[in-house]
Length: 165
Ligand SMILES: [Zn+2]
Image 1 (cartoon, rainbow, N blue to C red):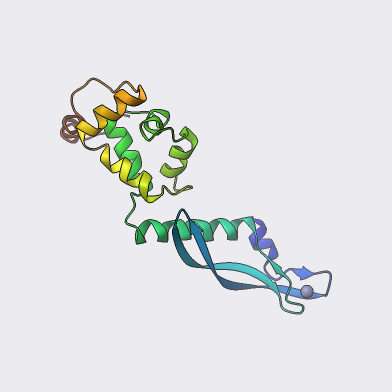
Image 2 (cartoon, rainbow, N blue to C red):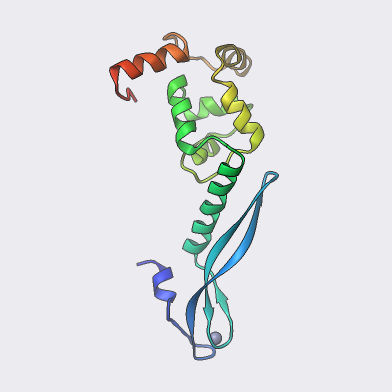
């Protein structure tokens, strides 16, 4: 059980009222992008005291990221993971190719916990270009896997039909 379920109908000891589910419209801004989402909360029916659980905040935050991602046509967490797999790179290496994005941020993008801004999104896409990839890797000191170009490896994987990890 989460605290969310415990709060529904819960007595507000201070005034004797009960908490009820309510929702509010909130604007979320991030890296020059914004989204408006409905966020659930609990409001005391008697005195109007408001409580927002961690779960309610997280749901609204993820909803906002998803809307921004869609509105700005950004790569999805799955797209980013696939790109990294296709390039045969670890999260830390991919971050280095993006001018030093920390590994934890890259992992956050792949889990949908963080959202890349438009500049980072464009850089990620540019790595599909073998020339850009090679040049960026040389500058960042990242050693790329040797088995052919990313495209060749994608094709090889498609033929095998599986994920080689
Ligand atoms: Zn109350």
